[in-house]
Length: 286
Image (cartoon, rainbow, N blue to C red):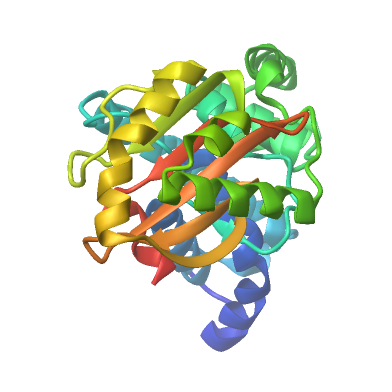
């Protein structure tokens, strides 16, 4: 293929778009490493493209990234069928919560077909018109509307219903950290909703509950079982932050590895706890 503008100019033009492309790829795939690989492949294709034929570079790159993600999702689904224990997306930690694509919504997206997921994200989250969505996923606009509509109905209950103010969220996360590590079960239980759930992702590489734990009593019992370990070895707090849009914290545990804990909070009560311990999903935190 021919190129234009030189490799240096093409690279300079690509870099400001890289964060946006990463957001698209990560929300499609739920994996930081896979998203980085997809964006890098899009960069390589951009460098090889005949850029004289590209009127809108950002739209071109959005299409490229989305199509690469659709290909990737086929193999990702097979991998998750054999995944050990609960699968959670790689934790992305930010100081501010400026996105409504929270962890529960990302889990709901996992239940969609790749095309439904793409249509929903491109239209409902990233604001693309259905004509552009159509060109991106190579389905006619009417089909794209149907795909997005079906997706919307499936994920409606997972969309954020309560905005948690930053300081309130971090205060609850701090109280949760102290109570869970000290063994103060009275305080710990008071923070939880009656239908609270606990989801832990160790990927078969670190100890974690294989199945989600549901209900107040069961979650308290699970935490009580961990109390002797925390008392003996401690748990080093690294920082608080928004983890996939939810208040939470990063810790270093007894084995020297990172863990992340994210808390879904509704009306002042914790309704879900998400813990990622799989070291493959935490490498980028270093």
